Image 1: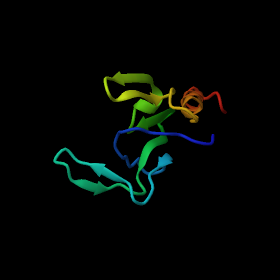
Image 2: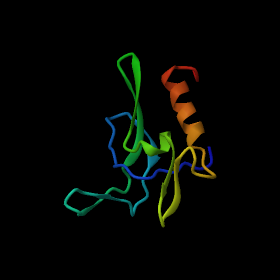
Image 3: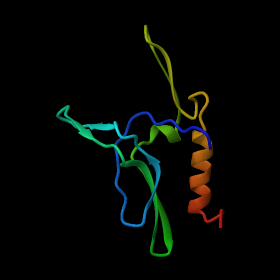
Image 4: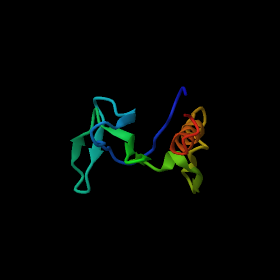
Length: 105
């Protein structure tokens, strides 16, 4: 995978032993409801871990797993997720489903 793009969301910290699949850069921030920015660098937007006999993937951002095209008068067309050019978001989704289904074992 070469490039994954996220669009909104929040940062996460997974449980002990989890793997961060999308680690945020040092300058990343979470915008709180009261409009404060809180440091989120080093946290994740996507974590994976084992739970009992199962597997879990938690995403703090959902638009990267959609295919959206939104138009607004005077604002042009905006693309999100699978429709964003030059990304491997589809491949990421496929890899996650395969891992969850144990197809990569």
